[in-house]
Picture 1: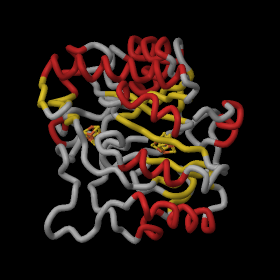
Picture 2: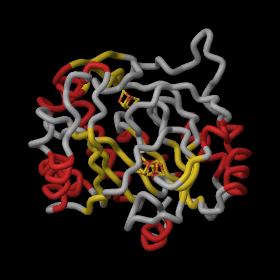
Picture 3: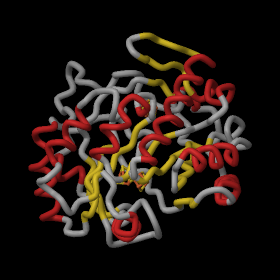
Picture 4: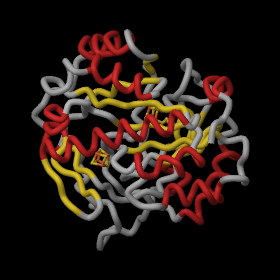
Length: 289
Ligand code: CLF
Ligand code: SF4
């Protein structure tokens, strides 16, 4: 759903200028993922309920109660977002949650993030329900993408290497085009991986801008899992990448790497652990915001 862009830039903590008085609640309703990024500690579907782990993700039907509680405790909240802990489109739980919330909290901006594998086919529904969407695009060249991602599961089939990369990139860009055209504001996140996509940032920025994205967020790699031996980018490398991207698209520089259960004002305070009482027990990893 397209909300006035001017209102979003003024009210959303992650779009427009830096704001220390606007907050968001993330609803951790989306378990499981359909791709396998090499820097991610959670393998496909690993964070679905496991024996011995008592905590669980939220049920879509529980979401409204938590939003009410959160607004009471944090009046700065302007955004209700779903950012994982897996991919929001890998199951129908995120979109179901937004359907249930729609109408109940008309003033809140609805925000979602996705890896974009299923964005092309779900674009219409996404655009109908979501005001601001983030898509993580780590490369637009399949040769580079194939070094960042191990595999994808697409319509029940596993793809690897260049073949997987081509499907992912095609669906991300086509999805962005459709959703942006329908009026949803699109932000693109890229994880900066030194030695792999650090010379590729200009091309990603220009390509996603041409597809309709309006803001770009470069996130430094957290070295873990298959990428644990790659050094995180230095401040200079991050700065350079942002300057290169800025030639093509507005760059967001205040990202706080929020967890999928973050609640509060990014970078100022967080009551997520208290609100959800630690029920989400996934490892801290790359944020999907
Ligand atoms: Fe959440 Fe992301 Fe929406 Fe913001 S976070 S889904 S766009 S409401 Fe924001 Fe957090 Fe950075 Fe994300 S600071 S990780 S950019
Ligand atoms: Fe999935 Fe996100 Fe992990 Fe990538 S980083 S494998 S998209 S959960």
